[in-house]
Image (cartoon, rainbow, N blue to C red):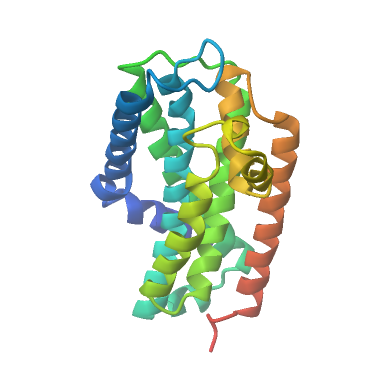
Length: 251
């Protein structure tokens, strides 16, 4: 297992060495979202009874930051290795495809959690955010980061250059994140868009995560957890098959 721990340590060190860019910059961007939306909509919108809009917004922004950074961690690392050619040193090492998968996904989870905890702690300075169930919060944070970490591997394997990876992030990850209920509850949507939101797996991640804070959600947290777990297992299986067959990695 020494090879696995070495690769995991390398991935952790890779983003921590540029922590100002990979951890603190996303925290600042998320806090700016909070500042702008709370200033504009605080007096004009309310999602849950007895919950201020700004407080409602915080869990969604925390999860959004985690998902985007978990995806960026595995995707950027793998695409850089492919473009530079250094991926050959990983492929030639005595590492199984499962160990490679776990190292990249675990590093993505760690980065996502660091960003999420940082944003949450920063918001506590200005707002009082209830925490009803740490277990639900942790489960959805873990599953959401794992799902996006695996998706990042898929995107990086599929992409042949940075432009293609950026297109995947801008046209797939970003819309799914913004249209997942970060800034609103789906009950405020017209029936068509409300129904369409139920086909977005990111919605279940954020809705279940928010349930851990307020004890209120748009759908059952057990159902949300089942959907997220099914998506994570499916994406993980696809990722493992791509690594096993060497798709676009072994030429």
